[in-house]
Length: 76
Image (cartoon, rainbow, N blue to C red; front, side, top):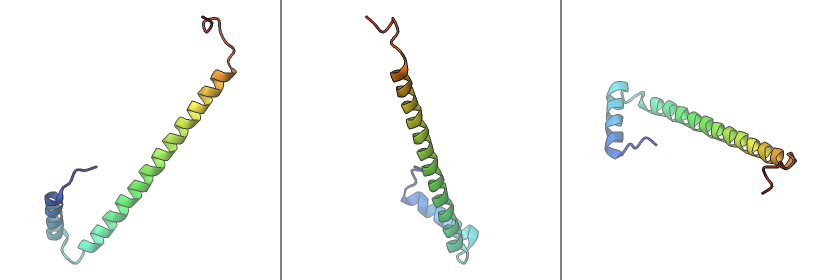
């Protein structure tokens, strides 16, 4: 997803420790974790909605093809 390895995560943690301070760092990471969790739920819901719309469109197309009378071009 982001391709962050252990060295990069360590640097980000160290910078966050200096910038936020050790007292508030757990609160910041907790809030960040909740934000990432909400973003994942939103993306999963979005993907499910797109899949549902795609399935409905395919079903609609297949039912329209079944209802359409055969044309002269279909006969070979």
